[in-house]
Length: 194
Image (cartoon, rainbow, N blue to C red):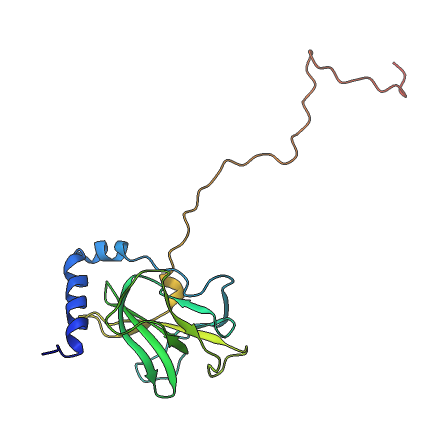
């Protein structure tokens, strides 16, 4: 007897959530997000939070890229959908901490239930994203789905892990001339009488 198609997904999600620390702060520290495309990262349409759950808004960001570009998992997760939604191909990943990210229009190279690592290829960008000012754009969305909070669309750019910044001491660009001292007298001007 073969298991129903949902069994691998349920097992994968159970393992993922059991092995991750239960404290919310620990889970947040464990999840690191990166860009879903290789550089350059050109945002052609920003996130516009909707005022209500059914109101208009732009529930993600659009990133310019060429058709055929590899789309990468923004963080470790489990594939919860890989295939068509209405008339467009889409990949959706569940991440620890109750976050879900979506990527469209993406021809999936992963299957539902698969574990993916941050930076792993999950599909290929297709042309034809509505309202894209370029030949192709990746629509990248983020959604918080963990109760007790209500479902909430998030700006995926705020999930990005920032690089570690180190401040270095400032070096003078034009050192000031040394002040005259008895050991270093100011030279006499030969054009002036002594």
